[in-house]
Length: 165
Image 1 (cartoon, one colour):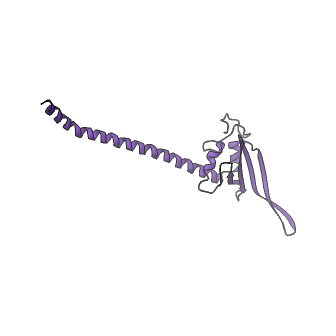
Image 2 (tube, rainbow, N blue to C red):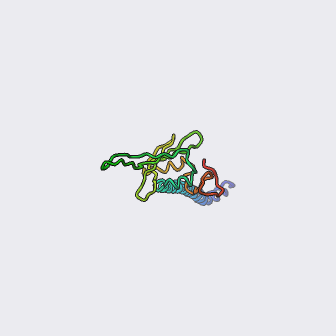
Image 3 (cartoon, helix red, strand yellow):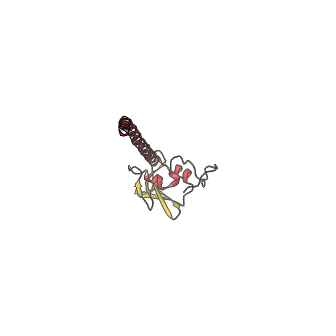
């Protein structure tokens, strides 16, 4: 008799219990999907910002963000045209040192008079600036990260800043 009194209540509570469990399970799945979607969105946004930075990066921006380089060399194309010796700069190689590693940035002159980034190399990666995975270089060289506008060792600004690296 006692058993009959308990069973009807258990049967009545069972559908409600199943709905509650199902609702919490669905909410949990939606929460996990939302967190994953947010993290993926942040990753894609950082990649886009990095690509944009790499494709528009100039020597002036590099020096403002990262300070004075350890090495700044020009490469030239030379030849004789109409009996005269001509020499034109064809590239500029700038090197920075972070800890025990060197980061090498190769720039090329453009029609606008600026030197634009063409290739980035470090012991970890080497990518052309117009490649789809060029954003990896931004994470590799700390002072190139988006939101980083000046460097502590830059002669251009005297604002107090966080050091590169």
